[in-house]
Amino acid sequence: MTDTYDLLVIGAGMAGVAAATKTASKGWRVGIVDALPYGGTCALRGCDPKKILRRGAEVIDAARLMGGKGIDSNGLSINWEDLMKHKHGFTDPVPHNMEQDLRAHGVETLHGPTTFTGPTQVDIADKPYEASKILIATGAVPRPLDFPGHEHLIDSSDFLNLETLPRRIVFLGGGFISFEFAHIAARAGSTPIILDRGARPLKAFDADLVDLLVKRGSDAGVDVRRRTSITSITKSSSGYTIHTDTAGTPDSIQADLIVHGAGRVAELSRLDLDAGQVAHGSHGVEVAGHLQSTTNPAVYAAGDAADTAGPPLTPVAVIEAKVAASNMLKSATTVPDYAATPTAVFTVPELVRVGMLEQEAQSNGLNIDVRYTDTSGWYSNYRIGETAGATKILVDKDTDLIVGAHLFGHGYAELANTISVAMKHGLTTRQLKSTTAVYPSTGSDLGSIL
Image 1 (cartoon, rainbow, N blue to C red):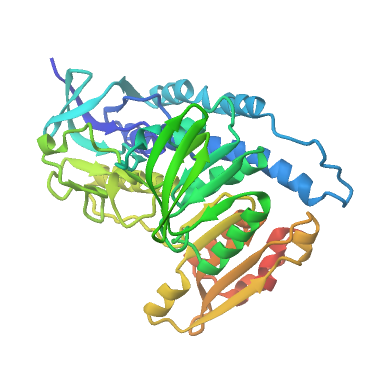
Image 2 (tube, rainbow, N blue to C red; image 1 turned 60 degrees about the vertical axis):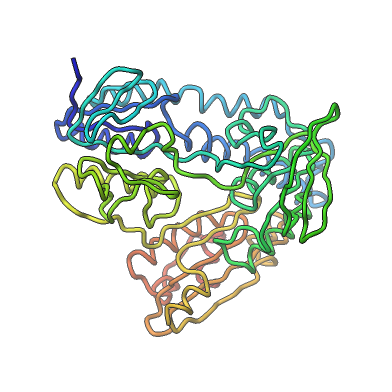
């Protein structure tokens, strides 16, 4: 006999859980399924555990910055095993707690690989199910690589579960994963190298601030090598030899560990979407703006599994899932609002972006005022011994509205949240500067940055 649901959610990450609980609260019979432990990438294999490990790096870095200023940092080090235990103290209870919460909200929890057998039919662990609506929220996986020796790489999930941290680590790719992990590894005593094929890493962020981050990382022991690609990897008794090509010049690097940080793709490989009449491409399930499949009206998709205009961020995935759920419940065509979504690279210190890059604002014909400020010598940085920091705020001269904000410095991810609120709700820079902030705090720098 086939079980039937009003909604079946494929993927028990933050997006899937948000949609499942929302629809169940309206009386729908909802099932959710995952082949992996419940929690998804962010809670188990990404954002949350990464930032717990980053805390160790922050403490080491903070002590070093205050060396000779009242703090003796000699001998201070990260105990990787204990730091990992601290991480597991958060991640290990997540699957059980999440399933319990889902059941408390009336959602039925299922386990196993899922494949479509028809437009509204799937098999889960070889058992048939049917649903009036299906939401695909399966997230993303590391992009496949095909150079000789690629099988020797570990991915981000493996890195976050390392029992010991080796000394020589090479990160492939110049994106979030490589930079964040390399900054952790450097403070934990490793000698990390980032290999980036392009002329500059972190292309989605302001180029001037990226340069400052690379310089700050270099001072902390992070070696970024540009225009460098891996041609092959060979294993030996002493580790790995990475054969590289840098602007046409061959070279080699010795490493104990090589980490895949060269991008991610939608995880759709096991779903047999063609059997479900669900169109899909290299960027995920093809959906209309309101997140409904372009070829199967019973199917919706959200997050990294969907080809949408939103950036690949957990909060965006959750917003999309809630919008998709609302559209299913109301037979509506609401489109998610991606305006002023902040994003950060949680290096030490962090790099943040909200809104347009400088060239994007110019290409859109905006009459912008570029307000660049070197904050390295400001009190908020002097207080902690930091010597790196800068901001670039793009203001529309015609409206006095912020159209882009780019920040590099300690605590600036929190500052970006205030800027995001201002941008989303149309506050001018004059209005922001008229607000009295807690002093002295990093937030009180905002008026001067503007």
